[in-house]
Amino acid sequence: MLAFKYFDNISQAEYNKYLNSYNGECFIKTESIKYYAQDCISLHQIVTLFNKLIFDKFKLNINKYPTLSLLRFSIF
Image (tube, rainbow, N blue to C red):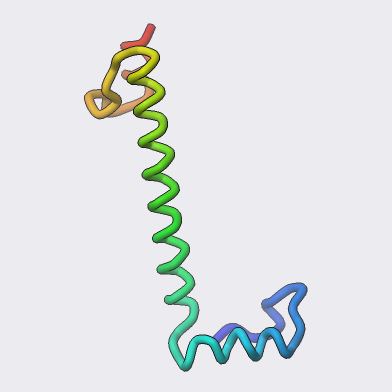
């Protein structure tokens, strides 16, 4: 468990409430899973938007180019 000293701008009561919300689970694991899930969702949205922008502007499918350098050379 992370000690109270590792938290900034949080009262002891808030810290205790935070700990109790995990019901004995390892909250580092739980928080890491949440973080990585959101990270994957964000990355997917960025790549999808990038693919759409490149296709709309240059009619190229980014999946056919394994690197950004190759995609750049194909555009120019």
